[in-house]
Each structure stands twice: as C-alpha cells, then as structure tokens.
Length: 354
Image (cartoon, rainbow, N blue to C red; front, top):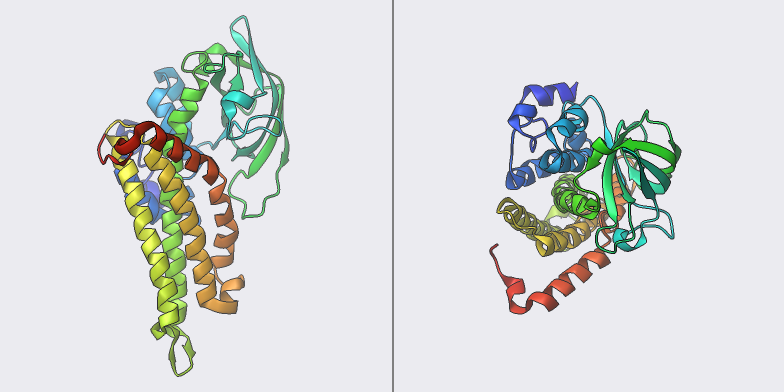
C-alpha cells in the first residue's frame, strides 16, 4: 500500500528517467531524498530506493543497451521484480580484490556463456528475479572479468542457503549460490568482454554513496529517538536533556552527522559534474559508516536500559550498523584508496573541483 502511495506522490525510483517512470533526479537530489526516506527502516523499499535494486537500476540505465533496459531494467523500475548482484565469493575467491581473486568462470561456447563457480553474500538473492553476475572470462590481469544478466528461471544454478547474519534481515537476505553450467546468451552480456570491472566500478561508486545517504537518515533518526527520551526523563532534579553530560553526547554525534552530510553532498556534486569522485566517495564511506555506529551507540546510552531493549528501534539499528564498515568495501580498503590517491596527487589531493 505504501509503495502505491509513493508512486502516486511522484516519489518513486527518483534517479530513473522520467520516461521510464522515475523523476530523473541527479545525485545531489538523490542525496537529499534518500537521507529523508531512510528515516524509516523500511523507507528505502517503499520508494524503490533500496539496495541492491537502486545500484542495479543505476548501472543498467547508464550503460545497458535499449534492449537490455527493456528486458532487465524496466521491470525493476516498475516494482514488478527484485534484483540481486552476485560478485563476492567464498575463500579463496573474490572479496575486496575481484580482479585478482575471481574464481567463478564464464566460458563462451557458440553464442552462449557457460558459468561455473560459487558466490556468496549475494544481496537480495532470495526471491530476486534479475541477477547481475560478475565472472572471469580470461586471465588478463586488467580485463579478465565480464558482467552478465541472468533470470532466476534459467537452469544451471541454485541457491544453496540464505546466510544467517548478525544484523536484521533485509528483503532477499544475503545468499550463497552455486553455478554448474548456467547458460547466458551473449546478448545478456553487459558492455564488452573484459569490461566487467568497469561495469561494477560504475555501479559501486554511486551505490556506495547511496548507502551513505541512507545511513545518514538512520543516524538522524537514532538521535531523534534518544532526544525524545531524554526530554521526558526526570533524574536528579531535572530533565536528562538539561545535563551537560547528555548534551556532550548529543553534540558530538550531531557534529559527525553534519560532517557526513557535507562529505556525501560534495561527492554527489562531483559525480554530477562527470567526475569519478573516488576519494570523495571513499572518504564519505569511511566517515558515515563510523558515524552511523556512533550515533546509534550514543542514542542507546542516552536511553539507558530502554535503549538496549526491543521497545525501541535502536537495538535493530545497532545490529544493522555493524555491517556498514564491511559492505561495499571494508573501511580499510577505502583508507588505502585515500592513501594511494594522496601519494599520487600530492597537494592536488585537496582540490575542491573536478
């Protein structure tokens, strides 16, 4: 019902073209709206702005052929199907280093590709219909990977399990998949052979930033919840909200959220100017992941035992937040990106523009 209300209000799939049922917002517009939409823990789903659908829609819209957009993109925009991305693999396969570690292979036979291998943490895979798959098509160190789309009804693969995780389950979960001769027509290949890493880099840059947008909304919501509590709670002759120790926790968390918003908006603006914004996205990803945890942790402390209970949303948020420093590149990887960029650019690392 809420998704129908979202569509009627013109708030559906904001980043997609108007002709396809979206609103054609740029990345800065997405940042403002995604943050607000994620004030609710299920808000992103209501507005068709949830991962991994938003990232898959973005990359298909940007680089897919018109035929691929009609076949794979439009049903996701319309909300008729959900999608998944299958990239990460169990050890010794690909994690943060897909170019060097990818074990899943796709071999071309005639006009089809045969896929063999195993993936896990395929976000949203349980119940998804459309899958974006990354597989090795050669041993070229730079162009050895290729991206494909496949449908859940195609034979040659199976969902082994929905991996139990520490945090709350989102729609579709995080799944382990096995490929044993999945056949993919060449027409469902994304970009050229060997351009798989380019495909996922186009997808993941904006997708990482949309995570940050949503996390800022959740961080703000956590502070709202705890502020309501301390404004009502009496202790030691006054409201908790009047205590300096309480204000220090609130002020520190609010400051970090402000910094996060500026980092996200700057990165969004650079993307809109045509820049890859790699260091800006990495900086935002590291900072906002830490800020999400700090804001929720402080809010639990402010609410005391009630914050630790399931009477409030904070414990749900707390378990959810721990993944933020791991998903879409661990914080350590993004810090390496920042260090390497600084070493390469020197004083130009600090440039504001594009």
